[in-house]
Amino acid sequence: MRQAVAAVELIAKDKAVTRVERLADELGLSMPGLQRLFAEYVGIGPKWVIRRYRLHEVTAHVPARVRAARWIVAGCNWRERRGWSSARTVPRFR
Image (cartoon, rainbow, N blue to C red; front, side, top):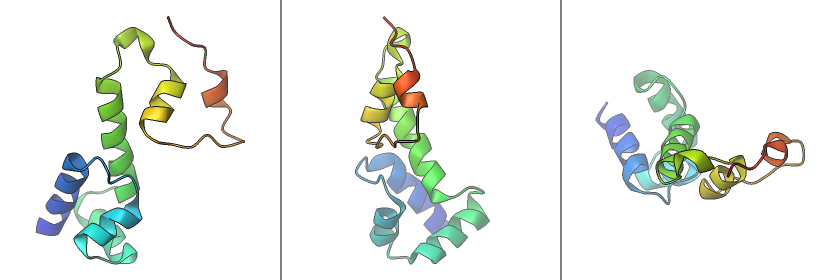
């Protein structure tokens, strides 16, 4: 359980942790070991915890009227995919 708490704290504190591989390296765990740890103690995978923290960081700094999808995607360092049309079709808010 201590490792799970340490993992979530690391995600919360270190903004450079944006990938599960990096989190596993930082904690000295294998990818399957990290997945098992999160499944047992957190209830969701590490990928979702990382995404949630990064999304909350980005949206906390965006004014309420300007929550455009492109701004959030850029702030989370996500890549637009060809098939991911929602990021291209969301209207810009002013």
